[in-house]
Amino acid sequence: MDLFSLDNLLTLAMLILLQAVLGFDNLLYVAIESKRAPAEHQKRVRQLGIGLAIVLRIILLFVVTQAISLFQNSLFAVRLKGIAEGDFSGHSLIVLFGGGFIIYTALKEIMHMLAIKDIEHEGEGDRKSVASVITAIVLMNLVFSFDSILSAIALTNVFMVMAIAIIVSGVLMIVMADSVAEFLKKNRMYEVLGLFVLFIVGILLVSEGGHLAHIKLLGYPVEAMSKSTFYFVLIVLIIVEVVQSRYQKRLMAMQEKEA
Image (cartoon, rainbow, N blue to C red):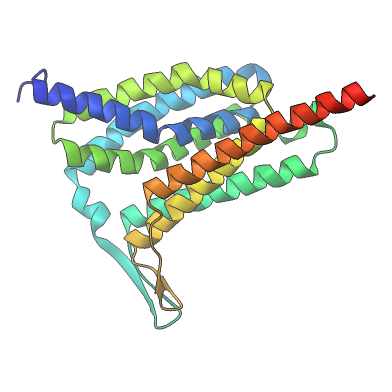
């Protein structure tokens, strides 16, 4: 099939848009996790982490296209009648693990923010090595990319179209990563919003993994959170944050006038 046919070009544009939308939470994770590296290496960590993730995404894309049934087939089942039931595949385990890890990361960061005593030197005693931060970024990139790869396979069977979409979206992430990280650094109040967005992303992934594994807890099936519900909650969170920050500025201005 001609790579530059109209059908392939339209599919490529759709895939790039899809990767960009699905990559927002990934970009947020990269910006927050890169803070754990020494300050002078944070930019290089973001670039190298995303760059390595692009290469591994293409490798994962090749593996998935060649052996997609292995990811969908059942690996093991749990049968505790009335308590917990599930039929776990490779796909469901990856999504469940990724979602659980994101929830853990978001909660850990939120608790850390509540516990700090010196905001000016926050995080200085909690640094990680460059290698460990890059590893975390690459691994979570792969978790985030799994569903986007499956979505890409559903849209086209042309490997080069999918690979180009991954490369283009990865380059966009590298370009935007510094801007997102700098924005969070200058507007610390929005870092809390970012962490709660990550927390909801974790819940989204865990619910999706539970649905894929047909998990039942106490007889009730785990249902996947719909993408429309996720985006609705995201919009509400952003609106609440914007309104609250503006109201807080007005209160501070009134207090300064009264003083």
